[in-house]
Length: 81
Image 1 (tube, rainbow, N blue to C red):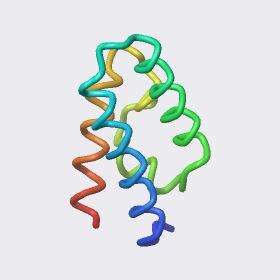
Image 2 (image 1 turned 90 degrees about the vertical axis):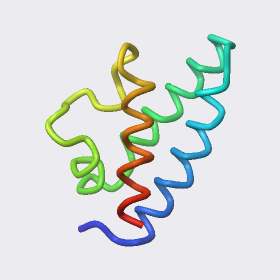
Image 3 (image 1 turned 60 degrees about the vertical axis):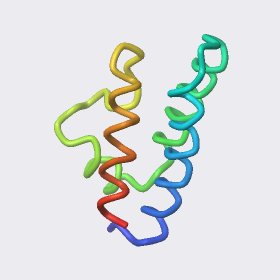
Image 4 (image 1 turned 180 degrees about the vertical axis):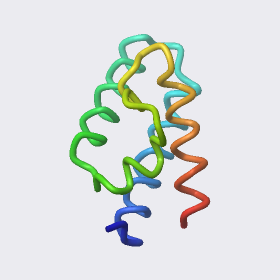
């Protein structure tokens, strides 16, 4: 079950990390953010994760698509608020 608190918590965390990630040119910082987001995604509300991931099994875990995934997650969560 998805509740308002899980949406707000995920949105705040992802939005803050995305703002830093999208402006960073430091590869170590960007890797740290990818790790933090993946760790959060492992523990977040599973129904909410499935909702924002759609049919993509590696959503927020694939380095090659991470930036787009994170941007997409922020957009989807904002719509759910």
